[in-house]
Image (cartoon, rainbow, N blue to C red; front, side, top):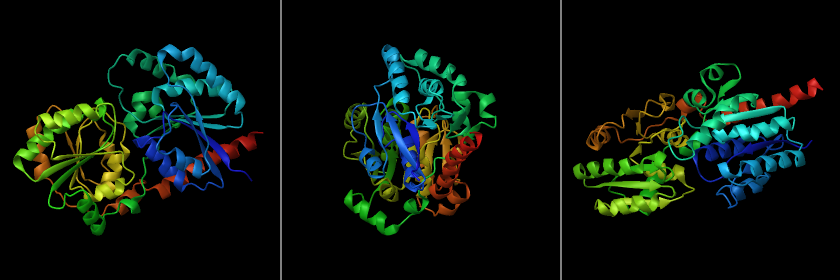
Length: 374
């Protein structure tokens, strides 16, 4: 038998949180039974595209979703689902814009339509009215509602839906064994980065407003003033990177901040950190926080992030209203040792082996139900 094919709808398969979560599941599922295809919304190749193709997945491309091209976009969606009528499950990860995709899937008669929330806020920008419009039209089209946390589900779907049987918190699982602390790996990466005798604060995230790099540098400045061997390692890319690099120079910290860009060896880097810093303005339940805890790190994060993210007791939540000196004091007085958290993650369902089995059962269960209905 050919595997059933699930259409995963994303923006672009770069190394972001939800994309990494999807790949964690994709690598783990039995691909003789289930295959993932991806509907993306960028022309350029994503970081995971070649791996997807090597695993047997297909990639289809749509234009970016913008208020000025709604009419064209809706037409292209209808054409896509008419052309690829074999899909019975569509799993959309584009937050409020999932309403557009699932509306087209509803028109095409696709019986299982999953909206998946990965955020708990949108922030404020020029597109906000259009995003609110998309969110408000969500209710008519999904058959199932997924979220990375209860808070993320309530934000996108409302409390009534988020407390119903149709709502599922799908945990952002990681490969716990891959992140389990290893001293040899730590020594190697710290030597490679020339940080062997340093106090290393790590951060992983796109350079955008949400991740709050500007405040992060202010915190690090205060840390460095009190501990001169401190270094900050920043992993990721984004449109604000040049701005943050300039601020690092203006603060006189260019030699103490390492910009690594996009990396494939996140688990290795985590071993080299002494502490993880994450002062985001808003999040859903970040995969990178699960990874940091899997590596046994203490995590200092903003209290805008849901407390559901504290799986291991290794997270400290601080208010963004507190000044950088306060954050620095907590950082310097916290534990900088790695601990083994792998069993805690497995027990709480944050290991990919456990959760990939659950997700596979969900998809296959829908197919079995549809066969019986016929």
